[in-house]
Image (cartoon, each protein chain N blue to C red):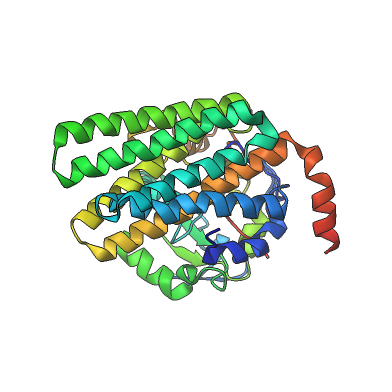
Length: 201
Length: 184
C-alpha cells in the first residue's frame, strides 16, 4: 500500500470530524489517495508503458473490492468496470493530447465526463449519502485537475505540474472522506464498536 | 457535500448574534475584529491555501466582493487550518497566496481556531453571513458547483440579496463542501 504523508496527519484530524471511524477513514484515504498518486503516471503512460497501466487498474480493483462487504460482489464488479473505464479513457485522452489529435481528445473528454456521470449515478444508487449531483461535481473537478496536470506535464511546466499533483492529491482526500463519511452514515452499526475502541485508545 | 451531515459541529445558531472576536492578524499586517466593519454586512468565509475547492472559488469570491462592496457587503476570508499539520497554510504562505490570488478582502489567520469554533466551520469553503446587527443569517456553500460554468443556484448571492432587501433569507442553510477543516 502506498502511504501518503497526509495519512498519518489525518489521524489527528479525525478527532473532530464526522462520525466515521479512524480506520475506515484511513483505509479510504489510502485507497483513493493512490488515484492521486498514480494519476500522474497516467500522464506519462505512453512512456511508462504497461507497468503504470497495470498499477492504475489494480488500484481501481482495490477500491471496488473495498465495496464488497457493504454492497456485495455484483455491485463491486460494476464499480470495477466503471473505474477501469475511467483509467482506459485517461490513457486514450493522454495519447490524443500527446499527438495533438483534437478530435480524439474531445471525444475522449466527452467519454470521460460521461463515465464520471455513470460513477456518480452508480454511487448515488448505492448510498443516499452520496448524492449524484454532489459526487459528479467532485469527480468532474478531479477530471479538470487531471487535465491540468496533463497540460502542465506536456508543456514541461514542472512548477505547474507539482501544483497540479498537490491539488489532485488533496482532492482525492476529499473524495475518500466523502466515501468514508457516506459509509459510516449508511452503516452506523458497523462502526459503533470500532469508534468505541478508538475512543478508549 | 451533502454526504456530510449539516452542522454536526456546534457553532452559532441561525438568527443568533455573534459576539465580537479577539483581534485576528490579517495578511496585510493589520489586526481585525468582527467589529472592525460596523456598517457592513459580513461574509465570513473559511478558506484554505491548498484546497482545490477553495482555489476554484477564489475568482468568484473576488467578483462577489467587487460587485457587492458598494452595497455594504464585506467579505472576510479566514484561514483556521493548523499550519503544523499543513505548512502550506502558514501565515507566510497566506501572504503569498493572497498576493498571487489578488484578494481584495482581508485574509485572516485564525491561529487559535476561535473563529472556526464560534461559527462551527466544517470545511473549506464554508460561508457565513452576518447582518449589521451581527446576527447569523446564512451558512453553507457559495453555490452548487466547483465548476463556475455549471452553477445553477448561487446560494450566497441569494442570501446577500435577501439580507440587503431586509427580508427572510430564502434558503438560510445549505451544506458546505470542500476539504475537511481540522479543529484541535
